[in-house]
Length: 206
Image (cartoon, rainbow, N blue to C red; front, top):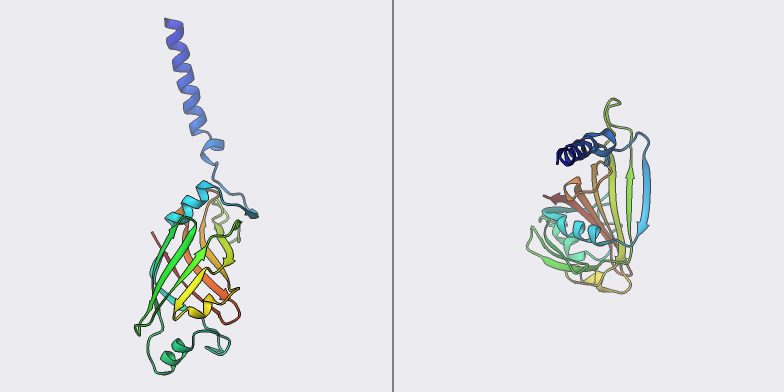
């Protein structure tokens, strides 16, 4: 009996040592200079993770110095912008059964929606951008990149319904080697098709 108790205590101490060892504690630690880009079919973990990542409501249309000149398919927003009306967006987003559904309303009261089916593969990018203090573990810059075909678009985004219109959704963030929904803080959605070419962006909610 005494031998059995000693064995149990020894096993407990061994487990405690393993759990507190640097190798175990740093399973998620990144090393300086780390770089990884992977394109693969997302497994259940990543599909569940995508479902946890939520868009904050406020978002903006991306415009460079040319403003609406390079943009196609948003003539109503162009008129609102010329008339001094708000073209900023409020978005309600859901991700169910491998499909994003975005319902959008502008400050001027216009509305539209997208259906974005998840493609077969997703690209994951992680890299040390060398902007962390040298005496601490690197904080990696991260992206989830999803490129697929727009399922449908209506309202102010009906131009995106013309086939084929492609979309690229990028979820951006920072963190260690292990991926968590809380790592991702910003998003960007770009569309490109026969009658649609534009992008908008915003923050991710908790």
